[in-house]
Length: 190
Ligand SMILES: C[S@@+](CC[C@H](N)C(=O)[O-])C[C@H]1O[C@@H](n2cnc3c(N)ncnc32)[C@H](O)[C@@H]1O
Image 1 (cartoon, rainbow, N blue to C red):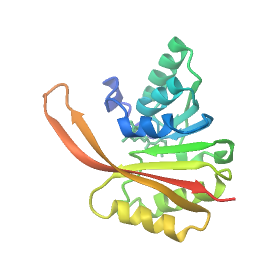
Image 2: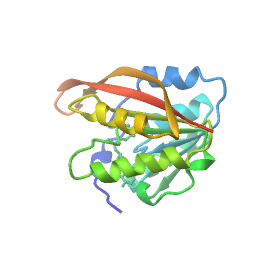
Image 3: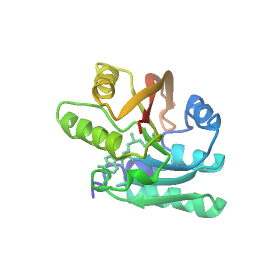
Image 4: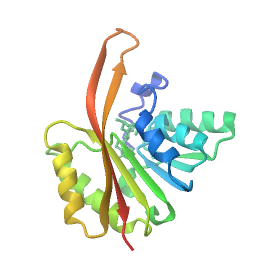
């Protein structure tokens, strides 16, 4: 395990509220279903999506984040299960109607090859018709790299792309910042 985020997650709800656009997107889908939140952290999205009625599995290698998520799931009796695991060791993507990866990929030089291979694996192993949503920072070449992966991968086709703004407030210092993000959704072909 790599508990890199365990220390950050001593601050509860570190990343704040989910993007309103992300909630709108899922709320407007005709069917709720099984959703896998990969790298769910403390459950910023997973908890909100379970409250909307999705049957959510969240995976993350931070035991601290997963413990916080599971506590809220139990308190509210949500259809939400958090599992501590390395995302690269996870199998079973075909069991989900929806797969979400929010703020998981950066395509930095050192990790790019592993991240690209992982995305392609998800695209290929997802169930037919599954919707796979990726939120990533819209800085440098990140979105262009993602778009290249999508257009070179016959297993999926893009269904939507939306600009988001992530607003972060450091509660300790009061410092706040805004970052451009992109939310891209693809559908697994038959
Ligand atoms: C920037 S946070 C995003 C958390 C959440 N998706 C959100 O948007 O609030 C990245 C998350 O990925 C998790 N993570 C990073 N590498 C991982 C790995 N190899 N396996 C499982 N989780 C991982 C971290 O523990 C952290 O919770």
